Amino acid sequence: MLDLPAQHAPLQTALEAALQRVMQAADFIQGAEVQLFANELGAYLGGAHVVPCANGTDALQLALMSLGLQPGDEVIVPAFTYVASAEAVAVLGLKPVLADVLPHTFTLDPAAAAAAITPRTRAVMVVHLYGQCADLTALQRLCQQHSLALIEDNAQAIGATWQLPDGCSVAAGTVGEAGTTSFFPSKNLGAFGDGGAVLTHDAGRAAQLYQLANHGQRPGQKYVHHCVGLNSRLDTLQAALLRVKLPHLGAWTAARQQIAARYDTALGDLPRLRIPARQAGSTHVFHQYTLTLASQTERAALQQFLKQHGVPSVVYYPTPLHLQPAYQHLGYSPGAFPVADQLCRTVLSLPIHPAMPAAQVSYVAEVVQAWAQG
Ligand SMILES: *Cc1c(COP(=O)(O)O)cnc(C)c1O
Image (cartoon, rainbow, N blue to C red; front, side, top):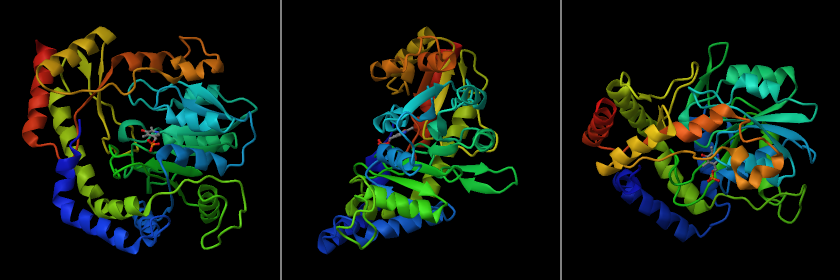
């Protein structure tokens, strides 16, 4: 599904130099490279403030903490996502209120989000699943109409852009009050361990997020704790390694998009499967290339056929949030989110990564073709 050693091989000398630098400086926590990385990523994302933290789940938690919500306040979360999106809400004593997603783009359905609003709703957490933005124009309008904060879980779509109604393009994760990203090794910009960041255009919120992630302290002011915070920092070592990788993110994204275009051409007109749809207004950075099959049986058949031919494939995600054991207390009935249910039974992601040789892409496409036409 991905080949990190191949992706890192051309960078080996630079990565080793970064490692040596940090070993010599020995500034392992909040070293100079952390802020340098934050500045460089912020510039890449069109001038956003970037507050690095320990992982993408903490980033979501920090973004929510910066909103000053009260226990029991509700946050709307898509029913079809990685569990971290809802976990960050629940762990703060807030209530995740689930809403269904759209069948073709896999992201939060603005109409379902609107229907989930109650007097306790304070925020909408949108997830840019698989590498493209949800319908941010509709969701931002909804949030403005109801005075709700918009939080973007951008763990999977770093570098994607969204076209605002005025025609300007902005980076995914910088449209709402706060956005997040993850540097989990398999993400499009992956560290050599855990890492994450919160993104915001608001300098005041960025300063507050820095405090929240650093025991309530301000930069350079030790042992004065202005708020109850977390210990959630990006290691200097990870920041130094990410600084080596960041300049390549654009080319890696282009490589992913090229592979997706080749899959589209090869698989677009086949019976038995649907290629991923594009959300108008968004670019797609193809964290995943995800097919939709007609049924769970069909998916199992394709997955088995791929396996027999040496091709890996993965189901992201097999269970919707409302059917997870940890979220039974939310009290949803099994059929509450039919689209999320159906997608959990029918999606299948194919291998896609920047170091994937063209011959492998062709081979995967041929195997899928053989199955669909066989
Ligand atoms: C990876 C991911 C996260 C969590 O990131 P971690 O760094 O692993 O904590 C959150 N949301 C989504 C959609 C993700 O894919």
